[in-house]
Amino acid sequence: MNQVESSIMLSRRNLLQGFAAGAGVAMGAPLLSERLLASPIGNTTPKRVIFFMQNQGFDPKTCIPAGMKHSGSLAKAKLPEPISALEPYKERLHIINGLHGLHTSPSHSAFFGALGGYRGSDGVPPSGSTIDYELSKVLPETLLPHLCIGMDSIENMKTKPTIATLSASGAGQPIFMHSNPNHLYQMLYGGISSGEIRLQHEARSSVLSQIELLAAAKGQSLPASDQQRYGQYVQGFQEVNGLRDRLDTVSDHLREFAPKVDDRYTNPEFETDWHDCLLDLGISALTSGITNTLTIGSGRGEIFGAWKGLGIDQQGHNLGHMDQPDNPIWIKIRQYNSRMLVRIMEKLDSVPEGSGTMMDNTVIVYTSNNADKQHTNGANWPVMLLGNFDGAFKSGCFTQVEGKRPINALYTSLLRAAGQNVDRFNMDDKMAKKFDDSTGPLKEVLA
Image (cartoon, rainbow, N blue to C red; front, side):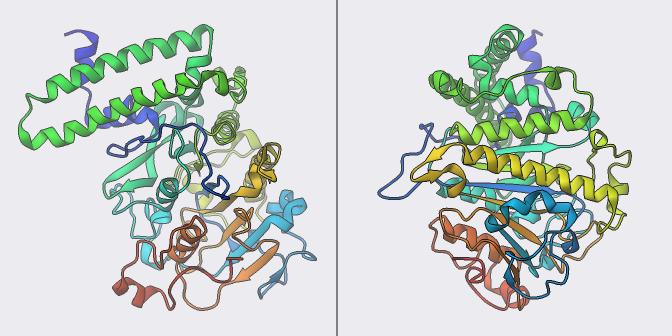
């Protein structure tokens, strides 16, 4: 049996986590876009959304200014130490407290339910699409509709370079997160690279093309009951190869945005070196126009994660058993996140767009995949928004949500801001009667 034929014998897990998953797309989530940069329609401007999901929960005391109990302006408030890096950007910040995710049944994590607004659990497939994917469909088309990156311990990122726990394109259709920056760089910029990266890109491309052809041929001999599932694998290879070809057609444009490959990629001292590389690649995908929807999973939607590069020896599950307020370990992690948010904003602010910058047309949603803490019932799910999405959201303020509104209401607000006239997201009337005492978007956050 030759190498190509052996590849067909890969297990379902390896197949999903390897070649087909390497494009960061879900099986059955086709890459339909034929354009690199979206062309605005009429007087509209391109928009983009970034989700930053920190695992182990987001305690409201780490983001709400001391003594602030009611909704109001942040102008005269001092931000807590964990998010102090955002102090110069208070006019672009909106802190939201009081949403809930009781219906997602979080414990160690709500997994797909965090962005899906439905019940999620460890090892359970998504029951529907998640908000990041839905937004990627309604925003102007890009070559890669949705990019997910996942940050973890260096060991996990090396042994499991792709993982799916947060985003989905539909029921049973997970979207994979990239955790190895070398693999992601090859996918996005291999066609414009030189040296070893170029050789690896060409070798990988050749193998993938052969596998696609062989897989399509071999699939015809399978029983009918297996052909549909096998067809999803074949489609995965087609999408990988199609994305590579489309990126090659705009290689001259991409040269301007590709990050510089340095020792952090090939010889990281700490996992935070790879975290930073992944962030750079995510930012470059936005600024180049490859994508307009980016999801960042710090801890990759589970209970893992490590930050030895910050001088933190504790990692994984143990971090969730620590109170976050006034905890020096969690202050370091949250400050690191805040600096990442600043890097995103500064970079998008440096790129002119329309009458302003890319950041003017962007919103960053910072929250957790697990409400307020590791062991939680989801009764409170704090969120921070950065940017106003071309004036769609209020900013420079704190909102204490009154009444019983689920995280789905925020996701409805995002869809409304993107131009979709919807009243609910992933919540039918029966569920709404139990978990939502209103309908439509959060009026408190929309401008």
